[in-house]
Image (cartoon, helix red, strand yellow):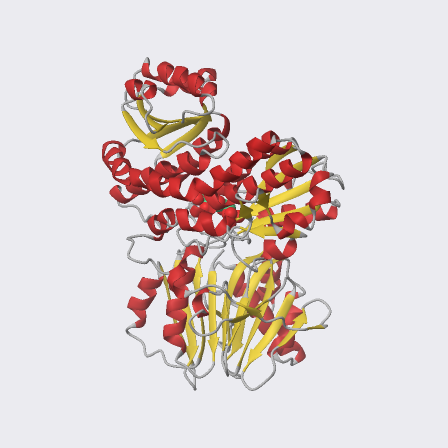
Length: 614
Ligand code: F6R
């Protein structure tokens, strides 16, 4: 994880770096730091805590200069403290580095460097890397770029790095393997960052480094990209960015998470715009159309993902199996990659990832490709590693998701996956014509219904007031809404730190029902479609053990209303698409509980948005 920012050009670097770090804080916020070259020396400022803490301590120092870099950290090696914060300096004090990733073989490298007289101040792997670069540079009298390359060839692990040398302060060396790195290309200036958000107001031209590539980013010289392994030159591919500033600012909401919850009607529309043509009875997705035969010949589809994206995968399993009658398995990417799974050439692997940078999902993709499978990506971040690593894919078009808890990513992923299922069903004839058309129309109505479901905000807030101090909470659902129960529980635990579990409602009697007493809030997802009667029976079982029931029901429901302590009504839709609506009040409930508990909703403790470590 971690966010990195760099600047070289004619502007003052400090405000660019600070603003950039704030935009990248979703990647980690254990500590923050920056370094500038002021024309004669390096100026370093770093601290445990957030970018705002860095700003506070930096007021004491004069931080001028047109070249610099900054870092916001999600701790891996070494506890979050001032010393372990980046940037790190080499022993001579000439080289400075920022790093996102993990150097796995740092321990033997460190031992060797200590033998050669190097002293280490921090517990980080990064300080080892900068001293390794210095050692290589000194030993063979190499230019910085070459020294970085030689050092990286000795390293095992993952990295996106920026390095500069105060004795040669007109270039920054950057390199990546496994962690993202974008270069914003301006007129006589360059920006470097983990994603394009820190520089979108300055340039819409960006180069995304590929794995095992490095570049010398300097003034008055052409930008050269090379392969780290064999030094071969790579043609820089300059991409035009589609992001705008408004998309990454809070727009009047108290938190990004709330803004993103409320964006769902419009982003779901963006997701299906140009792809779903309900009036023509058509679904057109280029990535699917171009590879239709592969999907149709698939013996099975294997979905790999993590966290919320994994929950979207579970919903997709139900939808694809029901609509297209293709067998689907859903795997945690972290398990898949390490368990020697059976993957055949005829398997289609779908990798789902908001960030497109999740290390475990990336590794699962690589493994599936090695085994000959066709790999299809469902990503949100355009140009992300997963979108480039997969054979084909479909973007979710949800726009930047800044809040660490995934919300709009989940519903847009389900939208994409439902469209894929419908397209395959059409090709296979596994849905009747009238059902196919009905689902297209239903999907087209979803944004308006999500907007209506957002009307439950006040109700969710009222219920949050009652349950905000509960130590535990259960979430139950069946069928399509079982994954929603898992997702509801994940949302609550990650942002409010209340222990929460999701279960298929019928599993209660196999153990978890023992937890029920008058203190246990139980959120039951009970829309009219689906296994309604069965869920009603499950509610009765909880009720008779004095559990407190918060039910998400279809508008007009009477039966559950009589049993539940609190009800939240959502609009009616088909069973298969109901997760797009039932999840909305659960997102709002978690949000309000977390706010009332005084938690940092957008940046929950111990988490980061983009999990680029395994
Ligand atoms: C939970 C959450 C995480 C992510 C997971 C995968 O709210 O955001 O569980 O879903 O880390 O991330 P992506 O989708 O970026 O691969």
